[in-house]
Amino acid sequence: MNIGIDIDDTIANTAQQIDIWANVFFEKYLKREFKIHNETGILDPKWAKYLYNLTEEEDEKFWNIYYEKIMENVEPKENVIEVINELSEKNNIIIISARWDRENGIIKKITKEWLKKYKIHYDKLFLGCEDKRKIAKESNIDIFIDDSYKTCKQISELNIETLIMNTRLNKNFEDENIKRVYSWTEILEYVNKKIYSEV
Image 1 (cartoon, one colour):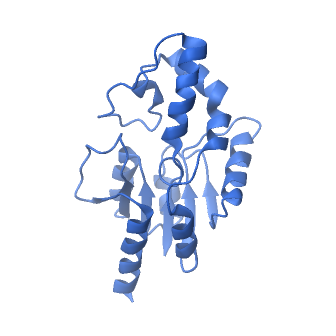
Image 2: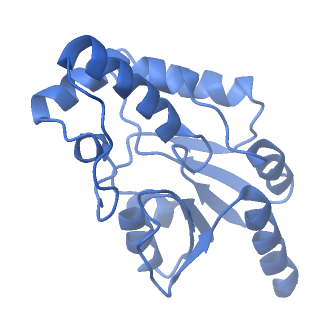
C-alpha cells in the first residue's frame, strides 16, 4: 500500500513552534501584543497571517526571519516515529509536503536532516507541493494523511482514502468522505484494519 503523509502538523507539531516564534516576532519587531485571532474557517495552508492578523508585509518578514528556525526546531507528534516505521515495513511511505524551499535549498536539507535525526523511515519525499493532487495520483496513493482541510478535500475527491489529523484550525470542518483522526496510534489501528480486511 502507498501511504501519503504530510509533515507539518501531521508528523510534526509545527504550529507549536510557529506560535513560539510569532510571539518573539511581535515583541521584537512589531512592538504589539501577540494575540491569536479566530481559528475557525481558515482554509489557506499558509494560515499564520490570518491567525495572527498580520499584513502581507509582516507575514513575509516573519517567514524571512524565522522559517529556518521553525523547521529546525519542530518536534515529532506523539508516537509518530514508531507508527510510521512500523507501517514502513509493509507499505511505501511517501511524504508530500507544502514546505517551500529557499533558493539555496536549505529547507530541503533541514527537512532531510530532521527526518534522519528522528529516524523516520520513508521511501520518497516531495516538497513544495501546494497542490498535492498531482503527486498523489502519480504515486498511486492508497491512503493520504494531512491536517489541511482544503488539501484533504481535494485528495478525497480523487477517490483516495483520506484521513485528517485533528488540529485547532480544522476542528470545525466536517466531510463524510474524510475520516478525522486524533492520534498516530489511531492511524495505525485504522490502517492495519484496512490491510487485514483486504487480505
